[in-house]
Image 1 (cartoon, rainbow, N blue to C red):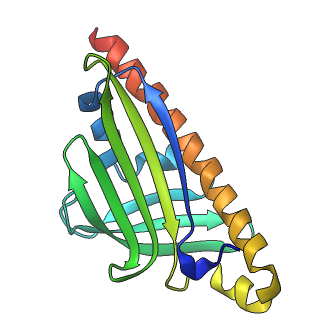
Image 2 (cartoon, rainbow, N blue to C red):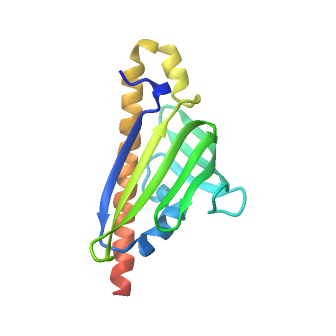
Length: 170
């Protein structure tokens, strides 16, 4: 049984016919996912991001939950390799989102992986789980499915954008 407090994760990946140097700027653009996600609406840097330790406020909307904002902190940033942010308190997070980028082939391609981990701190799922504790596994599975769908849309969108940029420079 998957419990929210156990920190369930989901991950998607895509091969991109462009080197990490072309893909990387998309990963660091905190507003780029809004073009593809059905939930994430955009974000604003609180300080000089993107940089390790920088914070931003994300804007989200869900048909059941409504609109909300989340404060996020960049918790990993390795140039052309990884970009990660944590939602809420860094030490007791509501969620963690991460892009990992690996070169493929002779340096002309990339593998992009997008991973999300929810919990253990309370989030928008917490009220539903509290109301229906016997359905926690179903609630968590549904939410992870929604994340997976939006994450897939995002990496596929990044693939299209990066490959179009690469085609223009080739």
